[in-house]
Length: 148
Image (cartoon, rainbow, N blue to C red):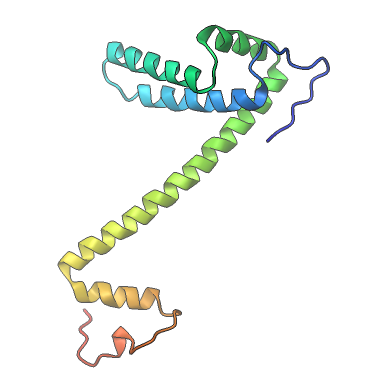
């Protein structure tokens, strides 16, 4: 959480910076998704529904959001700090998603390899787990084990 130092303070009728970070993150996620929708009319309807969901999630409305955005546009130093946090949140989400995608990719590669040659996958897993303790003989110790 980032502390925002302002001389007079941010008015109570404005979405506070820590909440605004979360609102803007969600808004930009929606904006990114909506750009993938080919038909402009459909995109507008989808965006409207998602924005309403964001407003409900944060107990705000479009008027308060617009008023808060105008306030932060007039205070670019605060807006910059908010967006620095939004960027950090995106970076964390990207890292988390990349990790999931990589894990799924490895599983898919192993599945495809197993379909082609199950013995190669066993050898691959044996190499990957070389440092692990074994309770029985290693897969590679079988004299009849085939490796291509």
